[in-house]
Image (cartoon, rainbow, N blue to C red; front, side, top):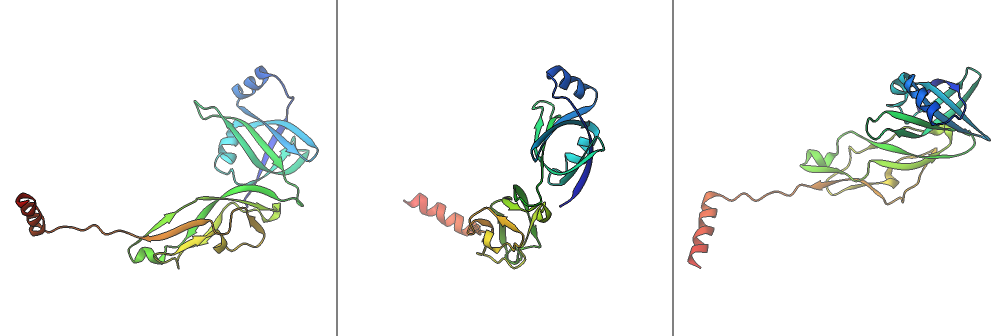
Length: 201
């Protein structure tokens, strides 16, 4: 999993006016839920847009006032529903000996064999809930679908896993290849024959 270092500054809890001024001055407030400690902070909103918005499934090394470095993950982003501006960030400190539960996207690799034969590849679910120790965390799960033929199904149990635990039933369907129904095209003679039969009734 990708690691990103964020430099932040400690802040007081403050009231709504204080938080509003922080945002007006170009900063985004946040909180880090740590092991036996919660730390309020703020950071440059430009960094939020550049380093966080498109990297939400990453480990963040939060450097607090250049004194404390904590390995975290992003737990929640609060948005302004009208402008989509990021209003607040919640981070969670990782304990190297404790499992973390989160969702990851599924990334199909290759093209299903059945598609070359005229079948249609259908994706049933796009994300899976998993748990892993911090050192084994991943930002996606790859599934090789190249051997998937028409009428065949890819299940959770088909995903090779070693250091992670998938929190879904093993028979959960990930994807499948189905035969495309062929439409029957009538010839002009067949159509005319049906019309004639209808008139004679």
